[in-house]
Image (cartoon, rainbow, N blue to C red):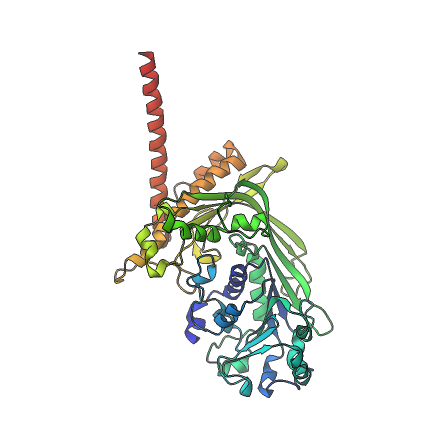
Length: 501
């Protein structure tokens, strides 16, 4: 656990990314973060254990609108393991997920349906109530316990209009996490992390989220909205300080979902964004068919950031604002690019060959667009990694990542197993297809005049060693396209000459 915290999550936004990822896998549409800066000194007497008093004050809350299943509850206690490793349609397999919370807390808890779980990896804070954690299933018979230890649950009251006492009579249709922020005193004794999150640390962290929140949504499959709140005193309710939203503007090409198991209640936008789910369905069809044709989708979307100047974590010169950005998103699923033997290897059973590209757009009058060439491209594995693509657009793929989600797996000279590093090179071929498909859709969306802008993409300015295969594949694809066009023109010329003779 300590190794995961010290080595696996050096990205300061990791905790936000992981909660968004978990919500996305649970098919939630909304994620809410709340910075709670209350002291809660009045709720320190009636607790499950006296030692829990130190966890009653400042906290980070996270909510999503999906419920925890019984399987989710069981997976949660399997610390340090990748519990989604065989789930083809979940992005959680690309990291160690929930363990990121131990960067900020020693005693996380969550509530979903009628269950509350508190985790105590140190096995010292819950005393007689749990060795490593406690699970409380709220039933009418638990009313006495709620009254006896009422201070323990009071911090939950009023958080997103929720109350623990209501669990006895009504299930909570969502999931709510509470992460008491590690204090300097706790850091001295913690075996997990010595990272302390004082008030100024949290303000800095929240500022980072405000700046980059919209980018976190570009390749999510289900989550379309993120809200950021703060709570500064017992006398107030949580205040909404910033909202990030993505929504479709125009569909250019859509998946044919006839043969795919897609929830009919899903919004069209979510269904078209779910390339992992579509490719997972394709993977299941491999045993019954030899050839699976490429599947592609493309749309224009916009991201909207609405922020309030009243937030304590906003800079003094910031004002309330609404910022809109437009994006051209194009995705391809291409099983024919992948070695079937490679797909059969154990380490790649949960991977699927899908990729996408996201071009920034400038909106003009009359619903016209032009491609932005000033964007700083990032490599995504459905959430952003720490790799700059060197391109003026973002690329996304079902890559094999290190557990910190920051880097793609790379082969080094002394690595014995070469095959496990082949996957990313093959996925980059699929990403290349997505780029070409995206450029084709850019011509449709932006008009033929945008062809001049494409010159700024050439030559491909890729510097990252892990993306070398993309440059090679792209050049090869362009040459193949040119060869095909020349061959077609030659045939037409020969046919013309033959008809004249």
